[in-house]
Structure formats: structure tokens, C-alpha cells
Length: 132
Image 1 (cartoon, rainbow, N blue to C red):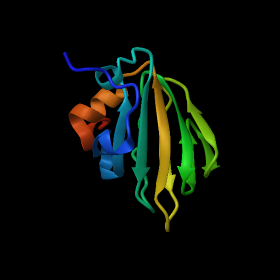
Image 2: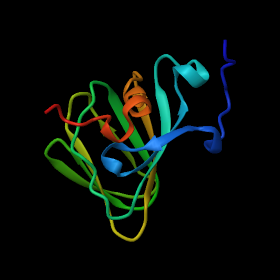
Image 3: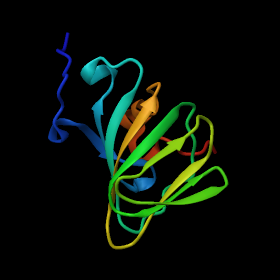
Image 4: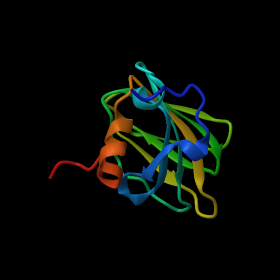
């Protein structure tokens, strides 16, 4: 049995390509790494000028913006976002991230309960593709 980590440096995160090839995901805390059963925590970076795919999750989640600026589309509303701002997305609500040109957008994301991070881990850039 692998020992669970209570402290996870960013350099040790499980990393991969964000859905839509929009940037990089980094999973720091989930059930596999830390034993967390009720949430997961990631630090993601979307590249400057990127328009993320519109998608939804069956869990609530939130973002905390660390650096960069852009827009969050939640349902049919659009919000400007930047450092030191938190954003909430209810379960089953379409959302999209649009990153302003000039600077990457780096943010913390928490999924509660966990789940979408497993799709990222297993499918990477195709994690939230629409079924065809």
C-alpha cells in the first residue's frame, strides 16, 4: 500500500494536458495521493489567449485565481476574473474559461465531491469531450 501524502509540493503533482489542450492540470490532493474522499484540489494553468471548451461536471467546484486575467462563463452569465477572486460553478451547469492574451491564467480548482480530476488523470485533453 502506498503511503498517503499530507503535504504535496507542486513539483510532485500528477500532471497532464488540460482538456482541449488548453494548458496543464496538476492534481495535488485526491483520494489516491492523500486519501481525500470528499474533495480534490488541483492547480491548473491555461495558456494566454486560450478559449476553453464549454463543458459541465456532475459535481460542484470552484476556482481561486492566482495570476492572469480572463472571463468565466457560468450558465448564460459572463464574469471578468483575475487574481484574488473566487468563482463557483454549480453541478451540471455549463461553464467556460476564456484567458486574456498576454499572460497565462493560473488557478486553484476544488471539486466536491471529487471525480472530474480522475477523468483528467485518465483522459487528459479528451476528459470532457462532448459525446459524438
